Every structure is written in C-alpha cells, then in structure tokens.
Amino acid sequence: MADKKTILEEARRARKVEEDLPERSYKVLTFQLGKGLFGVEVRYVERVVRIKELKLAEVPGVPEYIVGVTTVGGEIVPVVDLGMVLGLREEGSEEGPCLLMVRHGGQVLGFRVDSVEEILDLPERAVDPPAALLGKVPEEFLKGEVQVGEGYLALLDMEGLMRSEALRTSEG
Image 1 (spheres, rainbow, N blue to C red):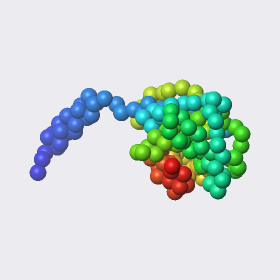
Image 2 (cartoon, rainbow, N blue to C red):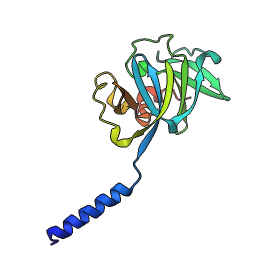
Image 3 (cartoon, helix red, strand yellow):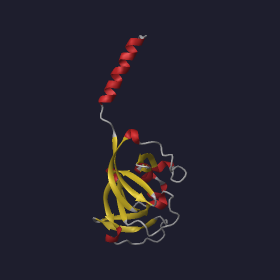
Image 4 (cartoon, helix red, strand yellow):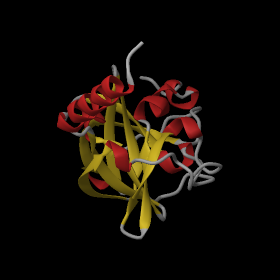
C-alpha cells in the first residue's frame, strides 16, 4: 500500500503533465440563425456561398425543411432550412441568404443560415452543457454552449445533426 507522501507526489506529477499538454480547443465558424448565434466546427465546413448566386430547384415530395437542391462545384447539394430542422422556425421562410456547405462522411448538405459571422478558437473548457436551448433544439444536435459577450453561442454537434433521421432521408 502506497503511503500518503507517494500518492501526493504522483498527483503533483500527473497535474504537471496535464498542465504541459496543449489545451484542446474548437475552431468554430459562427453564424446567425434567427435571433440566435450558432457555431459549427470548421472541419465540417466545405464552403460558404451566397444563395442568390445559385440556381435552386424545388423537389416535389420532400419534407418541407428541404428547400430544394442546387449544384455547387459539379456536386448536387440538398439545401436544408437549418432553422426548421432545429425547431426554431415552424415553416420554411425566405430568410437565410447564406448557404453553409458541410460534409460529414460522404454526405454534403447546404444549410441555409441568415449570416456568417466569424471564426473563433474556443477552448474546450469554455464549452458548457447546452442549458439555454434545451427544450427548443433537440439535445442530440447540441455539443454545448459558450458565453460570448453578453449572450451565448450554441455549438452544434454536426455528427449528431448529420446522423439524425430527418437529414439522412435527404441523402442524394
């Protein structure tokens, strides 16, 4: 059985090793959706395109949150009203002049958002459980929330979002 001094020394060494490790962080693209500020990890974002620069074709018989499809860089991309998927808009709207193209695995989707803001480096320790939006946005779509100024940024869990039943039905 180890004595108290040995245990304390091992704990100090472990803390020192932990302090020497680089702090993990998220590089996040932030965007507005309605009145909320959201973020998605940059590693999922392929590009941001202004919707007015694209030809959008409606597709009959798809769920109403699928606004249509477009072609970007030779690839057919389903365009999704992210506000509807997150439960923040009840029906499709003409809002959302920006298309946030994301890729997860082989699936590419264009999420219609209101504006793209900036890229932030968020330390992992700054990300709190997603309390503010629970009840409004399905929990599996949220990684957490971060205080930004006087408000909060909701960090989306792109893997949870892309795995959702709603978005899997839109695979091309």
